[in-house]
Amino acid sequence: MTAHPAPLIIVDPTPIDLAAIHAFLADPAAGGEVVFTGTVRNQNEGRVVHALEFEAYPEMAVAQIAAIAAEMYARWPLRKVAMVHRLGRLPLGETVVVVGVSAGHRAEAFEACRYGIDTLKRDVPIWKREHFEGGEVWVTNHP
Amino acid sequence: MTAHPAPLIIVDPTPIDLAAIHAFLADPAAGGEVVFTGTVRNQNEGRVVHALEFEAYPEMAVAQIAAIAAEMYARWPLRKVAMVHRLGRLPLGETVVVVGVSAGHRAEAFEACRYGIDTLKRDVPIWKREHFEGGEVWVTNHP
Amino acid sequence: MASESTFPLSVRLFALIREKVGREAIALEVPAGTTVGALAGRLRAAEPAVAPYLEASRVAVNLTFARPDQVLAPGDDVALIPPVGGG
Amino acid sequence: MASESTFPLSVRLFALIREKVGREAIALEVPAGTTVGALAGRLRAAEPAVAPYLEASRVAVNLTFARPDQVLAPGDDVALIPPVGGG
Image (cartoon, rainbow over the protein chains, first blue to last red):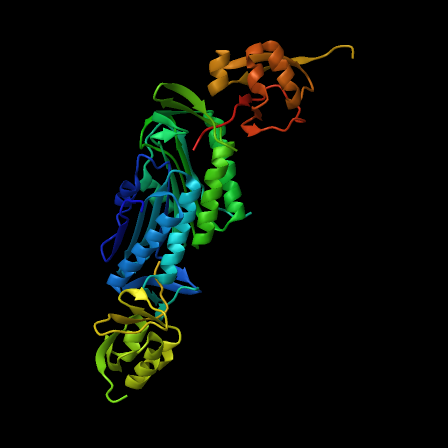
């Protein structure tokens, strides 16, 4: 078994520190780093959004993210992987999720980062309640 | 003609400020942001690298980057585009280049960011001198 | 069979399901040998309000998505996972 | 033709080429109607040290890569762009 650097995984209500994530991803052998950041948008499917509220099954969310990170390490020659999801009620513009990957070359960093966020959105037990103009609704990701 | 937010373009020797780039990319209608960061790696094609030195044809580099950003806006529904390249002699780990894109949805952000860095590496007049263990050499990107 | 042994199993609820059912978990008493696939029927019987959400949900056992043929054991950490919305 | 008009054209050099040739630009005097494609021959004649680098290089005119059939004009900002290494 190859030893990989432990991924950075956080699922909690503290604000996401992007600078700390970039610092974590830095690696002498990494030439490229791709970071996806998801934020609270002002509209969704025609609704005017005021805030999003995220709830998790936290132990399983961390376990699932760890499994996704392990798959990423297995499929691509990566240096570091960071996957962070914030919980609680977040206003417009706030950072919800960050998936960051560093690698020797950029092709792998792009592919792995994309895989990471796509898989997180499908398989990690986190739910989103949208507070919009006129109501609230649980919103699910499209498969 | 649709008006797009002016891209952030910098080609100069000042250190790259990632936080400022993330702040620039933030947009109320953007749900996703992809940022590629290229750094000075400790090795290249078997050589132990100590530093990289970047030289540009600065006016043309800025003009070419502006043309690439315009193509990105034309091909994908993007919110903001940032393309920054540092010049001068840079030690290991230093940030060389950042291409950042925000968009309503992540698929476009990933594709446009990848296109931006790939095209920058092919068509922007910036040259790299590698200072390695035992010598110096001009290094070109593989097509 | 002469005697059927059973064990208690608590199934955690989250998000929309927790809200609609009005509680954090459903307590079941299930026969030894019960599979993940058989849980839906037991949940529906124990708590009819959960019925509309079973088809779209996945079952997690011990923090992993479980296959329908997985046999449940005493002490398993079981949860009903409605469609997710993270990211 | 009775008289052939010419104009001065400076071709900027960068990186490896600037280093090998030992200067920042090559000054040419070219006939009206000279195309980008015809520049290589004129550069080689004016400065033999540039010859090995012409084939791999592109020509930029007024900050854009130029096609070989583009006709050069007085005042054009012309540069020889060796293979790039940015990013």
